[in-house]
Length: 405
Image: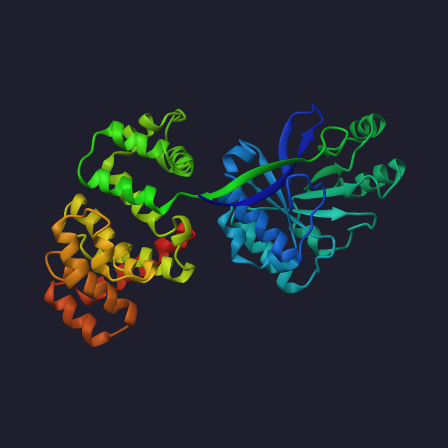
């Protein structure tokens, strides 16, 4: 099992009743770290974003709370930001962020998408700054000012339609002063030191995924499949996290492997394991190759939409994804297929581009190579409109981008 470490620091932000309403997230380079260590701010921001939305699981970190995420000016312009859920995300701008036209326009764009913006007063008033027109929150550093100065700054900003946050509140008397002044929110060591959470970034063993695919192909007893999951902690973890994702819309959390397998069903399980196969263990594919295989799977599936039932379309997806396994595993396709039990129609397509699925795989490959004459000939052979083929190709690219692969 391959594993690396991923860390996020999390400090609560409270209302005046000391109920947690949000967390500020920080990058951490180790489980014992109390400060961030990184080569540059873009690297730090990217680590927080990726860990939050994938390895750490934002639901576990945040619950129903908002996330304040520190971002540099460089990160502000990154499309990575738009992977985060707008309703939960507050983008906290660095105090060094410029007020250029590009920055203001980007902030306004993100606010229209539903994100909120926080700006920082670290001792210098923000009055007159163009950033205030984009701000939903102003954080005032109580360590950079006396409490009398904090009170005056609060009054300066009070006429703005923003929420004011007192940060670095470390003493009881500071908190009482913030209450008297009238702050909406407070944050600091008086309430809680930053907690650091550790998550293992783990991938299941390749052989474990392969064994389970074979079990499902031969309609093995569900108890045997359950035992297969229990033998690989990474697989069990990933299955439970997947089944508990918002995409399933479940009203209760799934805790047992057996319950999860019952909910997901064998067809969906086979499809999910197919995706895992290209990212498993030491055989993890190069990112570009992995993306191509998943895109090809989706495109092959969409091309057959008017010809096959759900089972047939699932098989087309498997054909597309597995068609690059020989390159991923650096062995002939014949050898790859000796390791996994697949229906004859799928193996015919993978080995010879023949059978009922072969023409759709060939058409997907032609789309990738942008071979117009071959696309037209293959589309005609399966009586597919050329515009439909193009629509399927665009839809498959969009689908994979949405997956964040």
